[in-house]
Length: 443
Ligand code: NDP
Ligand code: 2IT
Image (cartoon, rainbow, N blue to C red; front, side, top):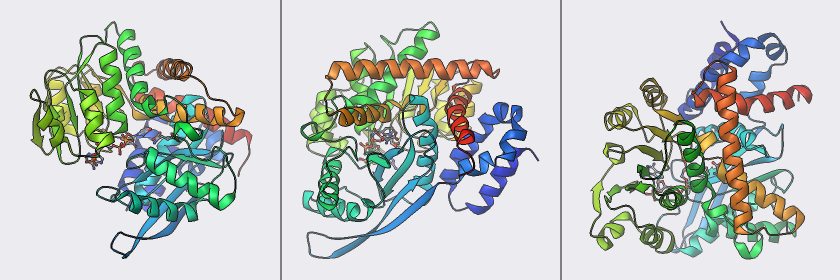
């Protein structure tokens, strides 16, 4: 049995209840075959893959808090610190009822390669099965304070630096930062995505979505196409989706869809991003309110974004939201490129179908890396106690995304898989981490 298959089989036997984690590992290990085959003896002798797929540590804790009716609620919190070979653990916190160890492990594993691609620090992820939807501000604060009263023991500016993800935005980061400061007495860059008045970076809010568009533009250019005038289907209506839509419009493209977990919008005149922000960021309301305020928009229940004819598809909601049937519908509609804004939104079968049908495909660990990259820029600003201008941060973000595109295309070419950006992203991300792990010995 090959080294890859042996490691995967052992992992699958031990983690059968964590399909998302196994899916992420499967994709990475399969695309690393060319580099692993070329170095099998060395990697085997160092147990490199066995060490790579096992997190450094998994922290799981009780989060008790009191709701507005005076009842005690108990949620489960997680922080999984995966790999710190090239820098402190770094990655978001997700608050969503679907969170369990398998979700956090898949996110943390992906984060290793993503962070490596940015040229900046490295992989961890956390979260809770707490659902912020429908909770009052006081309840969210009570939860965040309780969550941090355990998490603070394990994090720090040079140890592990959490940030936002699904269900965790500026409000939650603020409450957690306040509690960290109170418990430790330290004012340090322990979280990113902070508010601008207390150490946050300009352009962090926009960074993930903008980054998706910067790399999409680069991809199209490289293949002789222009993003201006293209019709784009976007899923999600949260942080990533909103700023992907905003940047798409600034680049002259026309995003015509967005979605949330209950329904989706088709707006043939192009999404009104100011209205979308008002509904989602200010009112924290549902997309039905967008449709009610916008005569050109159609609201549909359930899922359906990928049935819309488009040139470019940007899945920006959640894992496995684009399956084989969706991929078939996109190909039938003439899609030219799919760039992932979310983490692992495309199933393995759908990815293969898109690639087999000539669709350009960039995986999330490359295309959504602008968020964590800008988090690392926030860490730099915190360390030097300075704040850079929006333009300065945005310029650095553009350079990072262009550089990621260059790295993933050249790694794919080097290993004989030109144009396969899944292989390119996984190999380019892996090379640096493997190098550092080998240099640092078995630890
Ligand atoms: P938000 O919480 O801001 O938004 C998430 C959006 O996705 C909401 O519209 C939500 O709808 C929808 N969604 C969530 N879960 C589901 C589901 N099970 N089915 C359908 N729709 C769903 O999160 P972000 O925008 O920050 O994150 C979106 C994706 O991008 C995630 O995969 C995240 O890991 C990834 N990502 C985020 C980064 C960041 O900087 N924030 C960086 C890199 C990747 P509803 O409101 O109905 O729940
Ligand atoms: O998936 C991700 O890269 C994020 N949620 C952002 C992580 C970060 O540290 O900014």
